[in-house]
Amino acid sequence: MSDENVDVLIIGAGPSGCVAASYLQNNGCVVKVVEKSKFPRFVIGESLLPRCMDHFEEVGLLDCLKAQNFEVKEGARFLRGKEVCNFDFSKKHTEGWNWTWQVPRADFDNVLANELVKQGVDIAFEHEVVDVNFNNDGTSVTTIRNGDGQSNTIGAKYIIDSSGYGRVLPRLLDLEKPSELLNQSSIFAHVKDIKRPKGWEGTRITFDVIDTRTWLWVIPFSNGVTSIGYVGSTEFIESFKGTTTEKLAKMLKLSDYYSDRFNGVDFLFNPVEIKNYSKSVKQLYGKGYVLTGNSAEFLDPVFSSGVTFATESALLAAKLITKELQSETVNWEVEYSDYIKKGVNVFATYVKEWYTGNLQKLFFHKPENPVIKKQICAVLAGYVWDETNPFVKNHHRLVKAVAHIIDMEKQKSE
Image 1 (cartoon, one colour):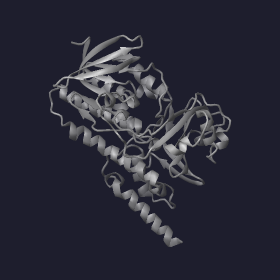
Image 2 (cartoon, one colour):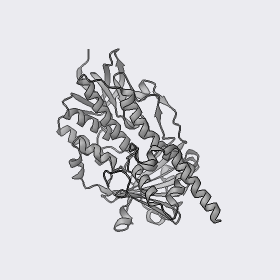
Image 3 (tube, one colour):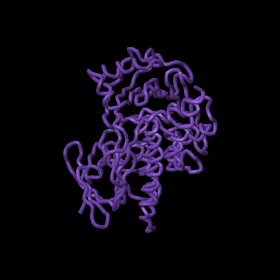
Image 4 (cartoon, rainbow, N blue to C red):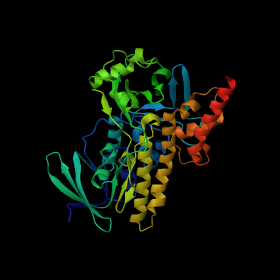
């Protein structure tokens, strides 16, 4: 017996949980969302990709977001010393959205959650999942605890774990496994961007490459605040001593392009450090549950793929659960796991080849090849399931092959 019963229990009220809940609610399912935090709350993952706009639009959450006037993101800039590589999302291989947003996630997630509450979705904030028991048929009883220490139980036909870095079911069900990616860490904060230049220069998201494994992100928001953060090997991040404030201030001096702009600027909170951030799991689903977004896989922030994978997987999970609730047969291995892994593997290749330096060769090579540029741009826009794109279909070998050709051309010219 449980205190209440629902069709679907969703753990986490971030973009993944909200997209799933909105779809299920729109399709007549009884949904309960359990969220450990009180909103608004700070979370990282502030740069979106055009692909996720499809998801917000499909579940009816786009209009409430448009009303917020978040900073429009029409592409991305990569710097390496005096070298510059600009990507324009309107010039990409795959048809789809040409823009998205750069967002303070506390505000962004709060807007989504408030819209769901308006639509009648039951969200229990400041409630933590402490235990889950599954029955043989996949139904479950979940114990949740509120801030006062009081517990109650929720019976559900399905659980969607959208808990992000909380990784609730991977912890409770022993699903964690080491990531195959390099041990990278990050340190980041927000600043009041008082020296922000006017126009395009002040608003474009930029990745400033310090060396092959080290880079700085600069993500301006429409409210005058900018997110800045360094990513590097765990050893590199740990080599800077002192408080997180002192460490990030020292690191900012490494950027020739941004050191003056952010010199002496106060951090709006003590910089946050995350070590060895890449995560993986043994499986993406089981009988009665499915993992979405960062609760399943987190790759790397370099191409801003986190929220897009979160919403892609959440929407697909919600659709498949709806089919099963309507007594349709679902092959979770093929329709969910294989599909999600296909996109994850494309981005994983790009992350790996970024840190080998091969992808950086493609980005900064001159003269640019406009066809290749459009194909890579489609990947960076999140359209990683479009196999008409050679840089999707042949991702494992094509980045290496083109980098090798660039090396050979360079040797000939020398």
